[in-house]
Image 1 (tube, rainbow, N blue to C red):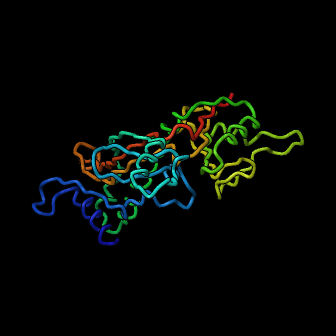
Image 2: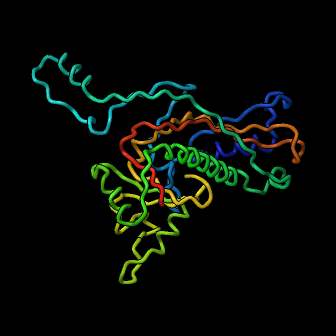
Length: 283
């Protein structure tokens, strides 16, 4: 790990110059152990920790799977294994085409951080890169969650009814916008007790039949002030195709020595199953 971190540090401090001739500019491909994107942070799970993640090294492809209800082995009427093919054909087949997208952004670095050999630039970059990659993926997942079938609700009982309509065998998650959470958090029953009971540390609810509860900023699921939520099987609803080709590149023309350190990450999020979730709008 220390050796790989030193490669990052060497690249940054040399401002991307090749070690061969000291003149030509190069990119640095980041290995997974430097960018720990899929290690759950101490503060708890995020959207990126609950969707299906598939590694794919090409630029795109086709993903094939079967629906949740058909995800089981079938009994054969005979030992003729040709029967197994006909049985599989009767199952609901889901095919999704995908093409990786590229996202980029500047990593702010001061001249002191770049030049000072005593500054722990490796840990700084590891944390910054991981956070940027995770947040970008969370935002893109949020865009896909808005594609779930819409359902309008106007009270807590209707919210519970919507949740209870989901298949209880699935791992169901409710993702609340901050505005909806703030509204529900103040709702009281006729006896004056707060209705919504959520354990923030453990990310679960005592009175909603879901496996995970996540609260996100309004902008992840809509715009400021939107009282909305996604509820359903996140893992089967959305799949993140991860290219595992994050990279750093020094780019000219910036306020820092005329150069900026840019981060590039490549992935795409696609909707897979459509009958396992709802996008709730509070009226």
